[in-house]
Length: 333
Image (tube, rainbow, N blue to C red; front, side):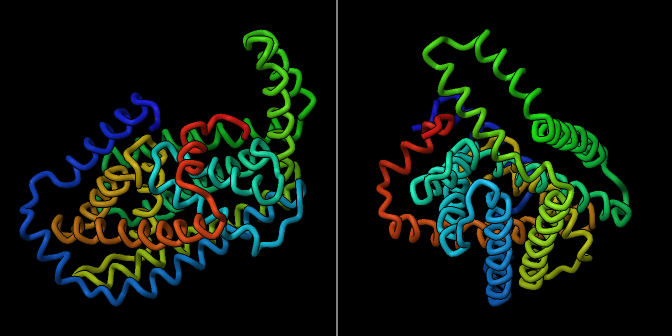
């Protein structure tokens, strides 16, 4: 089991956001809304979502090519298993599971893989911010919480990108810094492994040295999230409301920024609360907004999770092995 403090921190944040999501609702009305939805619209939404997963596989394949050229067909299962891991373990432990499966199959260092995954997350965050900024002019009355989210997230992701780009383009300087820190503050027996991990991590940032690679990763990230917003649009048709595609871009951006916060497994609460609040800004009935968001969350969570379990069996990974990697996600296995 993951560390107790991590579990309770995530659970507490999830409860907080769920309380926001469900406050003042008449639950029988919510159940009737969910029960009467036209679920056939979810099918094309799921198909579009898996097209976005394919684009994620291509993006990771592109980021890793300077480390090792791996055929995309062999990268599909690590990606799906990783997203399944994110859905059933807190603190995005699936990211390390993805890197672990790739090392298991392709002998790529976990540290190098994690560096490329971190680059993905930074670009995802930047695209989410762009979605929010593009959609903000369509908001009738801009809430203070939304304005503050944009400001703080912009500072966070821009700062993280600048830090990683500087590390990538000045690896000798970065090595001086991390070598000093490790030798100064880390016990002797851990220094050599940590220095090796830092070297591998630097290798994984190689794509940030090329403006062309940066542009390619950014464009691919934008395509990924536009496809996911198309899924939001399909699922919307299962319910009795209509908002613009820009409103759904805003919702997508806000909920995915919120899911960077610690939470219970599956982003419970951190996805739902902000999503419902965004729809309410566009005058969607709270009961319908809640029913739609909960069904959308399930439609995003369930297919990739089930497919991840199937690939886990195909990879002959035991549940004990899977759990052990999630619990020790800071180790370079």
